[in-house]
Image (spheres, rainbow, N blue to C red):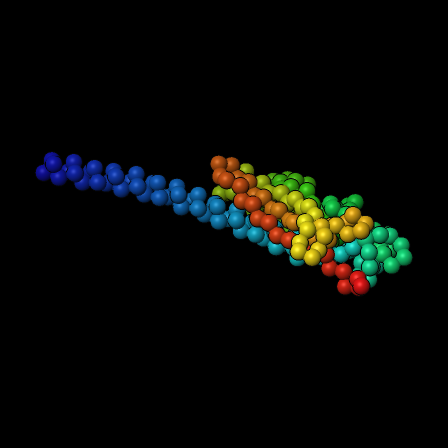
Length: 188
């Protein structure tokens, strides 16, 4: 009887250790999937924005034929990497309005000091959650493609490589890349 009790105790202890390890792996896998979902959503958000010669708020954004001010170009604001003065990701009255505005976006950051936030400013990684301490950033640079030069005659990007990185403590970085090609409907 004593041998049976020792044997059952050993098996039960082994199962406890095994289930503990499986539980830890499961929570890490869930955290990785959540971080991947945030990276995918942020990349999709960035790529859904317009990319024209002019800032989206410029009066000639839809009709400009070049990345310059005046004439057939922009009325005043040629699109540049980074947000225009006063634009943020979270302010509905003056929200990012072009893909290039996301250049250098870092989370946590202004408008989302507590962590990772969606475009409405809702925090996605509250304290004590699986993504506590995670950060995200967006970087972009001109990228040549077959038949399209990286920059135009005015030195402005024609194709942007967008890189979204989500970094969580104790885990590897999740890096997603995408391309955004300038849309210039009236370019001849």
